[in-house]
Amino acid sequence: MSRIVALASLAVLITGAAGAAGLKQVGTIAVPGEKLTNFDISFIDQKTGLYYFADRSNKAIDIFDTGADKFVDRVPGFIGVTLKNGKPNNDTSGPDGVVLVGNELWAGDGDSTIKIIDVAARKIVATLNTGGKTRLDEMAYDAKDNTFIGVNNAEEPPFATVISTLPDRKVIGKIIFDHATDGAEQPQYNPADGMFYLSIPELDKDPKKGAIAIVDPRTAQLVKMLPVENCHPAGLAFGPNDNFVLGCGADGKDMPAVTTIMNAKSGQVVAVIEGVGAADMVDYNAKNGQYYTASRNNPGGPVLGVIDAKTNALIQTIALMGGNPHSVASSETTGKVYVPVGGFGGGDGTIHVYELAK
Image (cartoon, rainbow, N blue to C red; front, side, top):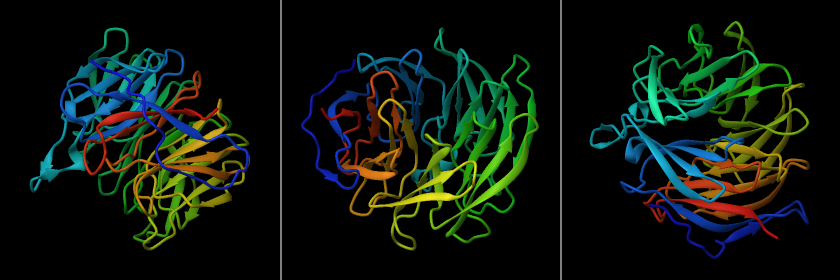
């Protein structure tokens, strides 16, 4: 039901980081069933090589094998695409965020619930409700303290819920972001200090002022906020040297389209990278030593950004030709990078596969 199609490399812009290896496209993976027009987050289990993808068009979590780059299975049972005034309503559609929690996959849905999937059985075995009316979006897992954090980014104000991943699945607490006026975005666990870090795009209706919220997973308490300006942060991924990359939502209209690198220890911005921005999800690959940005609103058209994580220099931007490509994930085993592209606006409705250029 799936196939790899070898493709010639798309138009690429090389800039900065002289001598650093860029990526080349090596194929696509077809998505069976309904045409892929609406989707959200993707996640790769680095132990098994399985790639989990929130496919709203098919109301399911799709599973792909990154060793063979092929479709494996599908777990249905999600809301899919909801409509408002005849148009897709992102706030109540699902599935949304996905993260592996031990032998389970926890996936957010459009009705503020978490669907818990038994990875071996490939079926939903439990549903948790976080008490909102809109989608449970992005999420992260702390294996040390057995805790999970999920974000209801479409609520007003947005909130995050910290839940025990032990068999009781007890709600530890809820953090309400009263000053967040444009949602709350991607959380990540930082093993260096044992905290969750979470993007807040906008504070007090000032689009140029955002923050990174730091949450204690043991107490579900907000520890502090790291200010970040002229970014409108969305995606967040930890890299080397206690740094993390932010997918800045700024699209070049009111703020320059850039990518920001911050340091978790100092709380300071260490690099502002010009030439690529307006990203949603971002990723770090230690094998390749690179950050990746799913820059769907980059000026001039959507691109996959490639940044050297050692020098914080832009290596490459790869044109993605439409399809709202806002999700990116990579394999630490093969070094391959996966970017879903919707089947509209010039996109082909497949998952694009890249690897380091030889």
